[in-house]
Structures are given as structure tokens and as C-alpha cells.
Image (cartoon, rainbow, N blue to C red; front, side, top):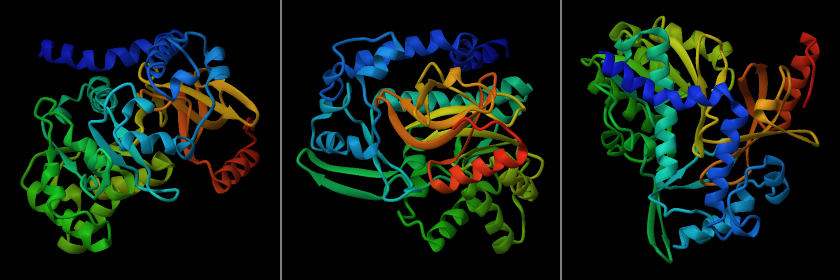
Length: 377
């Protein structure tokens, strides 16, 4: 048992260490990332090697969004990964298109390794913090999107891609006895549609495969988690809590998880612990660390900045109540405006409260006025 716990601590220790000295962790991350950027056609225009000073990095590299990178991504699709990436592409993943047309993201081995590291941290940290190792002894409901959706002919050959949640699930190694039920290949066998009838077929498969299994956790897009619970009630007259003793629900991809969605999840799944994770196709950026309803960044994997009007700060420099647009640097993209608003709750606790739309801005602006909180956007 001691060896098992030691192995678990090894998974989360780099994250814990980065929180002890966030400035040092972010400097080391910057040096590692810029070394990789300097080896690409895009990055070599701005640096010739590793950069250790964040202000120098900000002066050298422009902030960029997906549209700004699209010409380079097209070159990667056509076989020249060095135009944007320091490693070859091993898989393509597609976003869900929450703000428009789905984006196609190239995944390298390093990117996949970081996705798996961040995802494992959420589960392992929960087990260690709560001394609840039962969550590692059962299955995890697979409510992911399909990993095979479309294919495209390029000058380098045909590439295939699907939604990121299913794509990454196929690369997810077992952790002890923890494994997805059903496996992703079975989800994919039902087709690529995402209409109501398509989801009902997937939900029925999950029910058939998992109803006799020992399910201890679920992880996925928050509204899919609630939709599955409602499907079971409508189709089979049972709730998930009638079938399984769910220890924890690891919820992603929506704001207001603790304030709005958690009560719904508990009504369906019982008194499960709700663990929020800040994930996207581009990375697993942060996860909840304790009972506080906020996420804590993976400073050792990604570099985080926040744009506050015409000001720019490192994420770790934000004071309580300050908020703005998230800018993430990863092994894929430098200084990437991912399109989310983030707010500091103090002491490296943060909440991502919406996409960077006028509606999200206005809602948060009015919320701060009526609650008397300081606005620092």
C-alpha cells in the first residue's frame, strides 16, 4: 500500500511543487517552451533559443488566436509540422465548436502526455486528499464524444479526426483498476453523429455495459453527465444513484459547475463529490485541489497570462477579484488567446466564468456591481 501511495504522489508532486514557487515554475516552463518554439518556422521569427524573461517573451511574441494560426495549421496538415510544431503530429482532435465552427488541433506526443498528466492529477489528487482510494478501484463511466467523425484529404495523405474528449480517452492508460466503461472503441462503433438519437444510442450502450459493473467515478463534459442521468430516468425509470455508488464526478467544459450544475448532478448521481477541471482540446490547464470550489493551474505544464483591458499580467500575479482574458502558452501554441475569462479568488485559486463574449463580460460586470466587489477587467 505504501508503494502504491508513493506512486500516486509521484503523479501529483510536480504540480504541488510548482505551487510552492509559481514564479520559478513559470520561468522554467517558459524556458522549456521557447526552446521548442525556436525550432519552428513560426517561433523562429521571434526567438532563436530559450527565453527566461517573461517581459522579453511578451515583447517578442504577439498574442494570437486560432484564426491567426490557421495558415500555419494548414501547412502542418499538408505535412510540414515544423512550420508550427517542434514534433510531428500523432493525432488530430476537434473542438466541439461552442463559439462557432469546430477547430482542428494537432496533437503531438508531448501534448498527449500533458493531457494525460493533467487528467490523472484530478483523479489522483482527489484520492490522496480525501484518503479515498476506493475511487481507484472501480470503473469510470465513459460519456465521451466519438473520436472518429470526419476525414480529410491533404497533400500529405488522408487525416482522420474526431472530438477531443473521445480522442484523448483512447490514449488514456489504466490507473490501477480504473478503466473506462465502455471502452472508447465501442463508443466509436456507434457512429459520429451528435443528434439526440445518436446520444441515446450511446447512453444505451453505456447503460448496458456498466449496469452490472462497479462504477466509482465519472469524468466528462458537464451537460453530457446530466443528460445521461435524465436519460436513465426517462428510459429505464432509474437514476444513476440507484445503480452505482459514485464517489466523485470530474466535471469539465462549462462555467458555474459548483453553483448551478452540482445540485443537478447530486440529484441524479447521489452525494458524489464534484471536482471541477479546466480542460480544452488545447490542454488540461487546471483542476480543483481541495474543497474550495476553484481550480488551481498546472504551472509546470503551461504558461499563463491574463489580459485585463490594456494591461497584461502573469496569472500568478493576479490579486483577489482581478479578472481578464486567459492567454496560454503550450507545447503547441505560443501566447494563445483561448477565448475564456478567468478570475482570481486569491492564493492561486481561480474560476473560469465564461467565454470571452459580451454576454459573459456584462453578466460578470453586473455581478460585481451588485455584490460590491472590485472590478479589475
